[in-house]
Figure 1 (cartoon, helix red, strand yellow):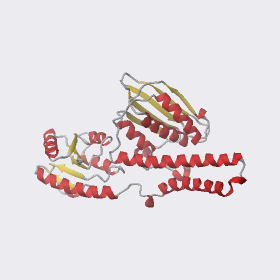
Figure 2: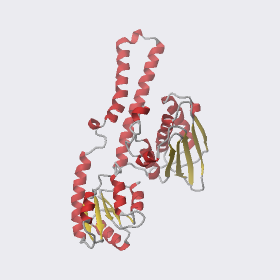
Figure 3: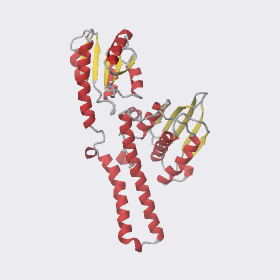
Length: 358
């Protein structure tokens, strides 16, 4: 039987240890953090079924942590219970009005905490099993990304079936290529939807990181991405050293596909993307992908999340807005780090650090 997962966030070590020991004995899987900032790092790689958090903590307090979780599309539905020893008028009401699910004042009985946890997790599981962030009927972007290539495939196939004998060989070939292009687009859309759901539900297996060569994987992806975007391969300049990275070739391929495609998508015509890769130190390999296109404002960078797209209508970009979210998740789950620096009108630089396979 799968254990329910609980994140306990409290800077008082003795309280954190008591709660952790009690919940572990009650057959929960428990992880801890001493403040909101540490808790967010835990959430990068592990999605709990419920969060128990103190309010008064250093670095990032419970209110700031809760606000950050609430604003994240993949975390906002996780039940959130506040703990506090602070005696202040209306603090319980303010906590609940901010979106917290429950509130306990210290000291409290552990059995009371368990009863609240059980009820909140039961409700959360009911929501989780019935809620899908990608409800096709309510998301026009998904409808567009599925229907557009599908209609294109069906249209060309109908033309070939009804009038195939009347087309010249070159015309028939162009239809096949158009069908292949639309099929690839639809395939990528569906793969990203499935990948996102697995990441969101914390069921993707990252145990098999058999190692990969960044140059070999890049060259494989570069050719296909340039063909898909109908640009010359000289649009991507590169200098990538070979190395054995601690990430599977499949996951590294996903990262290259998303970042190169984004770079080309947001670059202006005749601009190139710069890609470099080299060993940073004995433990890590640094990969840098830089474009000189439209860039993001600082406000947009703070809002980057799953399904978030900026100026979609103006820029006519394709996709679901999942690329950066998926890349960031995979990099972190395989032990690496992800950073993005961007300036509106000047471009974007993404730096990735991957562990090196011993």
